[in-house]
Length: 171
Image (cartoon, rainbow, N blue to C red; front, side, top):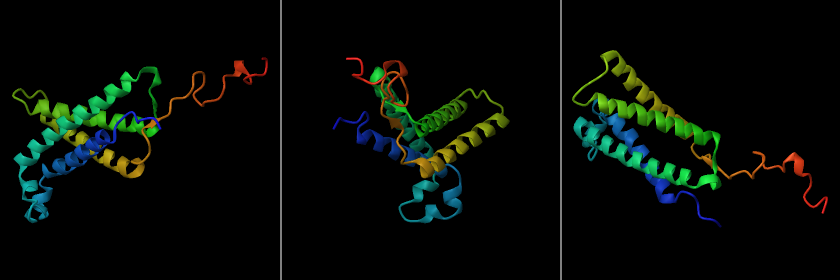
């Protein structure tokens, strides 16, 4: 059996970073302190904004590096690379939107903010909405493969091109 394009540890790293980002993203809102989750022994750090924000940024960096490595391997496979399925394209769009909105949020928190408060609120809600959409998509279609086998040259459905007829007919 041929080795997979992406090793299992890389896929698990993306999953662990995504789950950690979801947890720390919720931790930046006052949800855990308000509903007493931070009062559970061992989970007090979830109520601390600074620790969850720092961990969120660190996990985002891990996720960006892991996804960039996956994209580099996929693009580097050239014409032999497998094609993305519908769920694969949805994952690309959701992760790309989250990365873009998160990057804009980090830049906005820098020394020179460039957006008015209304746009910052829209950016926050967009980031939260994309995170919720990724979570819902993972529950709905999470086990569907993102990659499909590469179709043979000629047709995308794998059938023999019409001009070739049956192999061996005229030999």
